[in-house]
Image 1: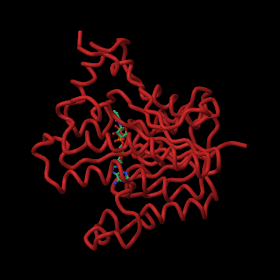
Image 2: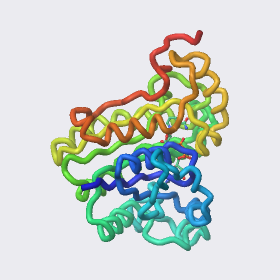
Image 3: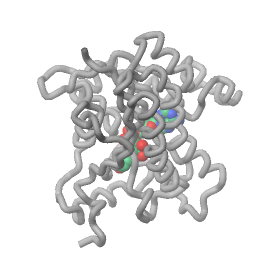
Image 4: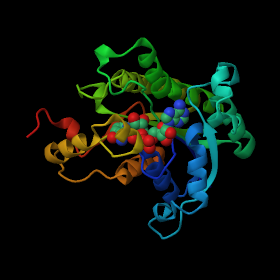
Length: 286
Ligand code: NAD
């Protein structure tokens, strides 16, 4: 029987979430995605109008099918958490049931269970500010959207993830090495995410034999990364300095995700897996 995956953080065909969806689809999984509410309309209409058809193509020539797109804002656990100005915001008022708890309830109603949970989202409103100039509000917002969002998704999905299932997130080496420019508490958020990966691996492993890993990905010119502003420099730096001097393809991260979600990785949990052309292993740029 095929597996079912829920991928949170897909709003176009450029990012890691899309690539992971494709690799999982190619491996035979049924694909559900969670799309940030403000990006929902344009994503769904682009899908409908065939704008993504070229990038939906899988190796065998078929097109990736997305069984259902769920509006999601992973900063809110349930309706009581949503402030009035967001509830009535034009970009939110048109969609329904997009808090984490409601999304999980909808998935349960529509499909019953899932086997694979992927968290491919992050947000840091002050990412372009150095850490020492970051406000408390900006720092907490980065942690809320980029770290706690994963705890919340896993917590709510856990009851409907089949035993033996797998969960993963995306992290970045700025958690453990100094990457000037990755500010606003985003480096802290990734450090929390990696630490939480270990603790959640223990808890989900003991509770339901579910594996929890994170992929430390190299730089990709996604929409989120372009918003940070220094992504082209990071891509050039990696190309020049990594052991493998080649472009990093989102598909390579997608394929690692498919491996980690598969029985081939049945003894891997609590791990940070680098998919970065080996850049993390370098001590100096040469
Ligand atoms: P992306 O823009 O494709 O993905 C980020 C997604 O997060 C977007 O779809 C956005 O709509 C969504 N999002 C933001 N706030 C949200 C919220 N509150 N609720 C729900 N969704 C929300 O960009 P990406 O670079 O592929 O990012 C995916 C993951 O990969 C992130 O965790 C990112 O930190 C990580 N990552 C990226 C790089 C890189 O260079 N691009 C490197 C390492 C790790």
